[in-house]
Image (tube, rainbow over all chains, first blue to last red; front, side, top):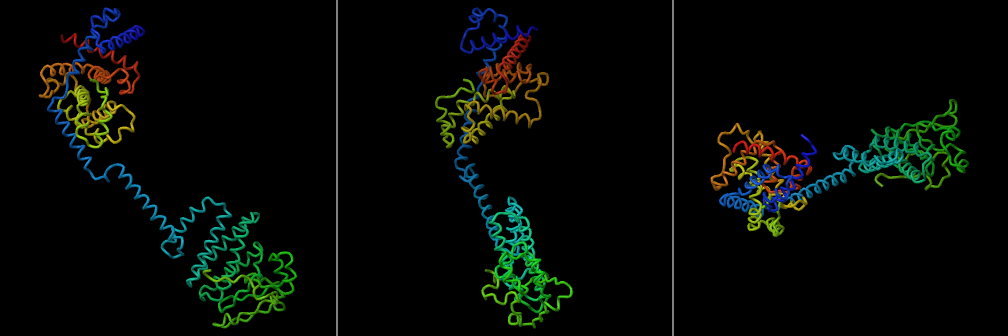
Length: 332
Length: 184
């Protein structure tokens, strides 16, 4: 077989088929196109096949089909509108929006939840998502603020949760460490939170139930330990209100405190003549000096905590009443 | 009239048929039903089955009419796609080849009793002859000579190049001519 000759024959066949389609007569066509003569059997076959186009549906079958189609169309038109695609989409949209609304409501309700409540895990999960895009410092500070707000809210309801305080302090510590060279904005927030914590921890020592006081005292010690990093709060570090359960530890010497607590320049003279208040746990006095410089305070009898709170330490004797450090109250 | 030849009133029929207008639906059937039926008859070789499949194709058309304009195809081409899909679905369900082999049938194709005798004779002969072709050759012959599509329309419908369809057409007509020569 010659492919070139075949291709030529295929082209002539197609040209002749088009002429026949346009109504040309086969004999006339073959006279006009002599090279199509060998294709006569193929062209005759094509004409014979065209007779098959005369086959059509019988009139009865046609009527039956049309009736069927009209009935189907009528049923479609009468079908409830909601079943049409556009309405199905609308329903789907309403359902999705409803679900989103429910989820948002749950997230909103969870936002006010506290540990031990059913929606609290939702709050923590959302928190995890929200903090994904934050820098480590921002994240630590955000979590410190949130845990502290929870601590305040639960304290306002009479529930003191030292774990929350500890977690907040740990996050604050982390944020302070990460943001040592950070911009001023986070530093101001760190400082604000630090002061809020100090105020409430001081109050907690007086009003918290006995079973949590020691845990809260530990939290306060941890808080005071942050002073070198965050700076002393206004009015100095307040002396914890002594209560029956609060562990009483010896007061440190001024020298030791100077070593441990960063004192802003210019404040040394005001505070150094006598030892300032030192948070419990920081009172590491060199051996041999305890008895002479830091007489051990007397334990407060039960029920007299507020009344019998020891006076201000030597370093704060002359401070005005309003300069005793921030006094927070729970729930504020 | 070819399957793909549009009617001047077609767009108005389609718009009205969407709203369930029985007259518009009847008009679409009248214009296209024979082309669809012929295509199905010559592909399945059974008039009754071809009628049932034609009915299915038009019912599907009514269901899908609201989505028709999105496809951007001439209505006839769209309808043909439905017919071809319905045919493939039928073969898949039957689990067998499109047409039984010539030697497997003694009685020839079944034809509807409503069809006139001379038409039955032509139709029956054509269906017998089509069995000598390969599947692709048969599709080309049915679409080009029995349904009445142009070469380009056949190529588009089959997803082939015009050159490939021309070659298939040449081989199919040669095979049919040899078959007809032999039985005469």
